[in-house]
Image (cartoon, rainbow, N blue to C red):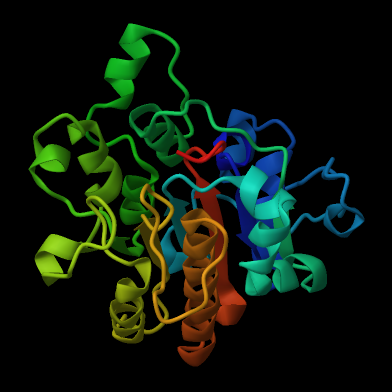
Length: 301
């Protein structure tokens, strides 16, 4: 679902072939019958991506119903970027210049995919983020009400399958999120989570509107991953806020022509350090990383 709904989507599968099949299988799978549910494997058909490196036939993907205790499941990290615009990041000179790590991965890593045709379902976070986190894009009042009920986000699925779960939010989980105008996002951010981090809990300084600098979360992400039970897979979701107006700028570094490009540079640094953490903790080879933008900022506010 994320492949269809985000304003800009990337996915990294620098992992064993079995796990790579999960991502490709999400794009096109043979129909499932009641009899096939109990089969240990599902047969995947050929991907229809235009990128030749993704065209592959595999039959060794674990079924999505496998539990964490089966030992079959990869770790998953989902990065939700507030106001991240693929149009700006991918198609402007300064956007490319601000994201050298991202572009190196895009151009040189065979397991890094950028779905440039992905589009958001709405320019409003209240609609877009729940859709991304559930795979459901509501079109009626009744379906909106269904989507906003507790228990819909994907975090619950990982929790129910025995994953260790954590949510790292650089957007403060304040009264507006918990009980106010943005309350429909609270369960999206914290639902099904064993561990939750946000600026208010950590007493971080706010860097833009309601958010702190995303990079504040990195030490806690490393600490959490390092302390996990050996052999048990994890699901971590991150709500990164640096692209939100007025856009986070690292004042210690030379600036671009607009603060939005400066915020992209901080996001690129976050991504690089996240991959460093995965390598340092021994999880780089068995983790799927997916990133999306809920909507863009084009033209600039």
